Length: 161
Image (cartoon, rainbow, N blue to C red; front, side, top):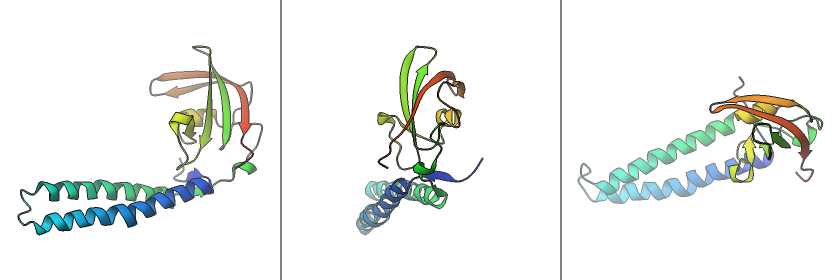
């Protein structure tokens, strides 16, 4: 399995902006809270100090995660992907063969996922099970909750970006 994380330039830029905000806006705020709490004296019973240190640790973990994603980023241009199969950037219309419902997902890279809008990571189990498949194919995708069974009804690409 590759350590590379596929994403568009837009997704990469979104992650860069989030990292910049966390490092240059959020972290200084927490550092000021720690300094103010430290100035109050005894740190062993200083709840504000311990709360700020915990916030700092959680923020640093998020910063490290973003740095790691950006370091592993591979910029992909969806316009250069094949148009007759499920690839990065494709919107896939599926028929759930178990409950006869139609579903639609767009396969996106890091920084562009939005599960409320059915924009799923291309590295997710569902997306991986669809990659390379063509319209009319029936697929069975093992997921932690069992096996998903779909027929691919359509594959579309957003030509605007």
